[in-house]
Structures are given as structure tokens and as C-alpha cells.
Amino acid sequence: MRLGVFGGTFDPLHTGHLILAEASREQLQLDRVLFIPAGDPWRKSDREITPASQRLDMVRLATADNPNFEVDDCEVAHEGPSYTVDTLRSLSQRLPEAELYLILGEDALADLPNWRDPAGIASQAMIAVVPRGGIGMPWLPFPASRLLRVEMPYIGISATELRRRSRRGLSLRYLVPAAVEAYIREQGLYRG
Ligand code: ATP
Image (cartoon, rainbow, N blue to C red):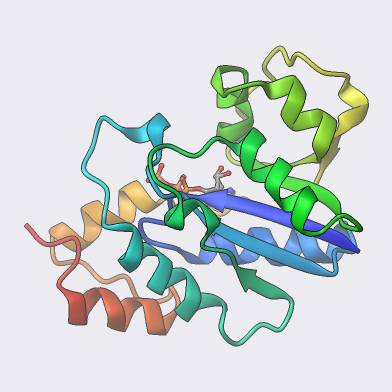
């Protein structure tokens, strides 16, 4: 089984995430893409993060209609910071037959050298990189043969910009799935 592993803060999940996951599924011939919302995103501890349960709800709402997409709450359920290297290890233990593909945008790849044990990450999963505005290739402590490229049209959507738009009372329509837009409104997220 070929399994895509797609982690993120998803604060909120947006259309860029869905296009990325579908492009990866198709090009890498993945049987499933596992969305894994971060519980305590230690690389983003400089800003306030929406509670994990609400970010998880948004990911569930956004992926419910796609049988190839699944949501895994392992990092949300885990106390304290989660490290990708540990998440991959526990996935391999749970699903020993799975071939893992870690899906990252270019900005996340650029940050990868700062993550815990990047070589350990690349030894457990192929690293699939999606373009995100032409960020240069960082030096990586593992062979380039562990990297794969996924093509997709450049989608200039970021969760940061969406939070900003929402605070200014601007529309999120089509930038996030309709169910996520309704959830943000009902829960009063990203106001003021
Ligand atoms: P923020 O603006 O809050 O940092 P984000 O939009 O980058 O959030 P994350 O949840 O941090 O969203 O991203 C999860 C993963 O999805 C990362 O690997 C990121 O590179 C990738 N990603 C997010 N948005 C896009 C996009 N528009 N195009 C390509 N990759 C994306």
C-alpha cells in the first residue's frame, strides 16, 4: 500500500491543501492520503493557534467526501509537541505493509533541516515536494534520491492570509471548502 502522509497546522484547511493532496495522490499513485493535523505545532509557537479539536473538525469536514482521503488524529491526541520522525515510526508500526510518502510544500522542505532528525525522516519515507512559489532547495542531510517532485499549478493561498482576510471581514468563499467556511462562521473563528 502506498500511503501519502500530509501533516500541517491546517489553521484553517484551505483549497491549496486539497489540490496538493489530490495532485500527490494522482502522480504518486497513492492508495490513500492521510491528513495529520499537528497537535502542538512547535515550529509555529510564536503565534496563537486555534485549538486542535477545531482544526481537526475542519480537516474532517473538508475531506469527508473523498474516499481516498483520511484523517489521523495521532498528533492531536498526543500530549506535547509531535515530531514527524516519531509520527512516521508509529505509522510504520501500525501499518507495516505501507510505503510512506511524506508530502511537503517547498516552504516546509526549506524548514526540514531544522526539524528533529531529518535523515531519520527520509529513511522512513520518500519526501514528495510540491511547488510553492519557487523557494530554493535547501541543503538536505539525506540523498537527493529520497526526493520526488509533485507538479501542481501555483496556488497562492496561505492560511495566514485567510486568517487576515477573515479578521478584516473579507470573504473566504472558494478559498476554503464550503463546509469549512460555514464552520468558521458558526464557531466564530478568526475574528478581531
Ligand atoms: P500558515 O500560513 O499558517 O503557515 P499554510 O497555509 O502554510 O499555513 P500549513 O497547514 O502550515 O498551511 O501547511 C501544511 C502543508 O501544506 C505544508 O507542507 C505547506 O507547505 C503546504 N501548503 C500549504 N498551502 C500550500 C499551497 N498553497 N501550495 C502548496 N503547498 C501548500
